[in-house]
Each structure stands twice: as C-alpha cells, then as structure tokens.
Length: 402
Image 1: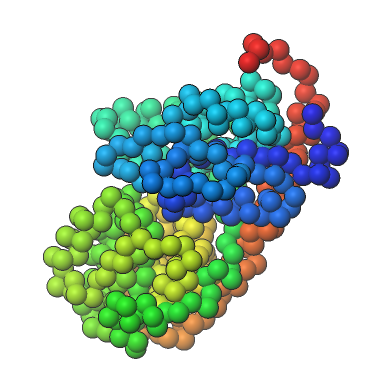
Image 2: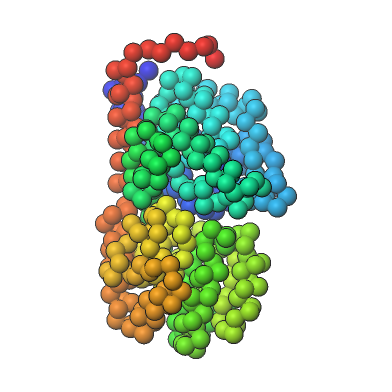
C-alpha cells in the first residue's frame, strides 16, 4: 500500500524492456539513464528483459527471461514470458510502479500483471512502430493496421503514456489513444560526451588531422534514411576534398549502405566504423566537426542530443522528434527532405569555422540547461507519485484472483 512513508523511503519501480544491454540503442540508453538517476533519488529499480546469447548477467537488479533469436536479427532476442522465475522475482519485489518501454510481447505481459494487481502502469512510447514495418514479414497495409491497433490498445490500457517529444502526441491521438500523454525526453549526461580523444580516432581511420569530419552515430538501418545521407553528403565531399564522412554504428542495413557508398566517386572518404562501446563515443564525437542525420523516424533524436553535448552543430531533416531536438539556425540547421538543401546546410558549416564554433557552443549549453538527467528523473518521479496518489483515492476494483 502506498503511503507517505513510501515517499520518504523510496519507490520500488519495475522496468520492462524488450531490449537491454548488451544491445545499444536509444531505448537501452533511456532505460539506463533513468534507472541510474531514479536510484540516486532513492528509488529501488529492477529491470526485466530478455536474455542474450553469450551474455552473462551479473547485475542482481536485472532479471532475464529466457529467449530465442531470429537467425537474421540476433541483436533483438524475443523473450519467453511464460518462464516462472522472473515473475517470482517480480512478485517478491512488489513494485509500486510498473514502467514498460514497448507495446509488444514481454511488456504486454507485464502490463496485464500490473493491471490485475492495480499497480500503476506507465509506458514510454519510444518508437514510431509504423516506420519499422520493413522488418515485419507481412503485407505493409496489414502490418500498419496491426501496429496502430497494438499501439492504441496498449496505450489505452496504461495509466500514463510518456513520449520523448511533443511531436509524438498528435500521432498517438490519431491512432485513438485516450490516455494522458506527457512529453519527457531522455536526459544526457553532458560530461560523458566531452573531453574525448578525437585525434586517436582520426589516426585509427586514416583521417588527416586538418580534415573536416561529418559524423553520423546510430543504427545503420533502413529507417534511418542512410542512403539519403550518403548521397546528400557526397555532394559536399565532391566539392570539398579534405572532408570525410564517418558513420558509427551497427545495423542490418550496413552491407547495403556500404555498397551504396562504394558506388560514389568519393567513397574513399566515407568510413564505416561499425559499433563501439558507449564509453568510446566521446572520442568519436571529439573527432568530428559537424553531426549529420537524415532520419525521418526519430521520437527524440538521442544521438543528436549527445552530439550537441559534445559541442557539435547538427544538420538534420526536419521531421518528428528532431524538429524539437534543437533550434534551427541556433544549434545547427533543420533541412527539408531534399538532398541538395541538406548539402547546402552542411556546406554553410564546413565553410564557416566561426559559425561551427558558435552553434556548437550554443548546442552544448542547450543540453546542459534543458536535458539534465537528474532534473528529468525528478520529473518522472513526480509523475509516479501523482499516479500513486490518484490510485489511493480510487474505489477498489474486484478482479479475478491471480
């Protein structure tokens, strides 16, 4: 039972995610960031996620479900939610809040578990699932209808839906979501992306120390619009011979993207660095002069925020969450979805060192003032407390025994 004593001693929060470390993506970064800072605020946070082949979990507050993998997509194993032991651990933990980070398989089971026990259920809707249907082996029209229905039904089962930026709210409303929706971005620890050794990255990849480096960091997936990025930046690379494009990240589109790059006459200055540990990313950011992203599917654009924390000006397509990530003409440039327009904005930054410095400094300050992970975690904690206070005033609901 929730009480004032609970507020003083700290809440118990159970987080469910369809993916977690060792996979690296925006969802995992969000879960880890909030977990760390909620813990600093006195919460006890446990994470429930699929197991990963070959990965040995040593964190006593992370509980793994057995899983299986599709042979072509091993980065995202599918949890088997009928396993008894993780649910036993969850029952012993007796969370005050269940916070899920997907609308699909494992998190849906967690949602039913929470609702049967009248425990407030919170969802962070990270991903515009209708933009990822190329991974689904179904006709696209049918897949889109199912994705919207799954999103609507699960969101409406929740007590609160959190979105990384206000851009997602009208999309969910158009699906028929009636639940309260609150925008709350993932915070960025600014110190984690400063003071990197950029010179070592340039040396490792054969990039001259006086060259201009355009950096992309993130998944190499079809939904990230990588082919557009390659062709748009190649316009600039052909004009400025001492400019390189460095792409950091793994992904299912990597082989195809490399083939596209090899067909361009500036391919020797397009470098695919693959995936790297999170702690290495500060070095990659330090090696760059401009951050570039052509993604049309972001709900926040966490890699953009990280680049800004490192003091990089950004050029990105003005779409969805990216339109809220930074101010056009202040922290970088938002471009229409046009290759030549995108290249023109990159060209402005390449040709004007003072502009790069001014926008990069403004970007760093913006992250420091608006994306503090501790202050954002406090806002989340306040949302949890409000839900628990509301639950105290509601009449009991008689459910079938569990």
